[in-house]
Length: 436
Image (cartoon, rainbow, N blue to C red; front, top):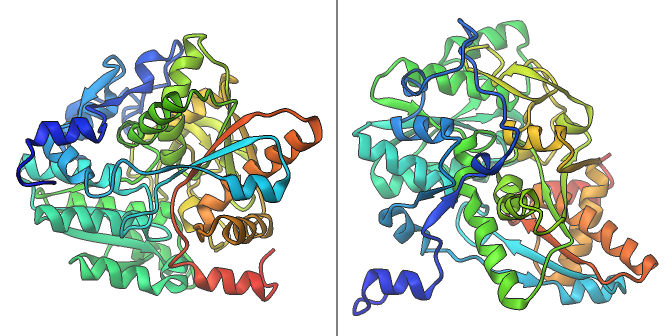
């Protein structure tokens, strides 16, 4: 920020959104409430505040306020890397010989390499404001753990990260980055929690899952009143913070006079997809537009396309609240694929409700299809995408090819959620023909 420019003027010139958008407020049919695992009654703010910071508990249960102001301190931090670019994929369009216009919102231009920093700074900020000592969390591929490590370092908070074992082994450099920012990182399942020890006793070779890591992180937080737990996806509060992605995208498209016909995002827990589609859901619910909204998930962890819509625990050890979502079962351990950020057993309750009510589509694709699309994109657009992001790329390419066949010049928008800098082992495995 320029030293001689008033802060609010700088924010205005950079079109930084002043509020997060809460999709639940505009949903005619609301998602079912989270339940207390003991009483099966809807959770209260006070009950949730034993796990999350108090403000996060309030935001999680807020279904009435359409817009929630973003504190100036958070907006100032976001200016380090936001607004992020909305890119017209001219070279990709040319390579596909398609009349479609393809746009992607690129979130990989910060050290975490992904969109995760948008909610990490919010969750860390409210923890600091509450006077907490530190936070705990899980991470899959490591983008979320890195993002929260960055936010905690900025605000001088302690952080303990439980990283899914197979991802920790595949991506050791992620651990180094987190530790560089001062985080304490453990492979999950670990031996430092009761949950981890129980899992290892049952299966010493367990490769871990986000469900196992969540169990450990929640247990660690509950043992010390100065800590609270943070989750990087799935929760309503996270989709709220990620709405900044969609708000920026919508504003940029309006400047160009473009109305999207198709909006695509990769989907694991649902945070980036929920953030990207948020304003378009609002317009769709109001009958102003009717874009197709497409969630793309890995065939190895297909919660939407193969899961059941029901209440389930958010973790393996059954210590978290019950959420109504599409789920493969909280004891589901996916194969150790390379899209570690998409290995959660359930889907965001908000997105699950939208999908269940027919407002959203879902598709699943294999690792090979994902990396076919990733390398094609890298060769023609110059950016090496994260494996998670490449799921969205694959379907964007498929839809663009359909436009080539039909001659329709549709507007396709997808989320490029992160870069593949730490995923070179996966690209090497793909090049050697080792991925299914």
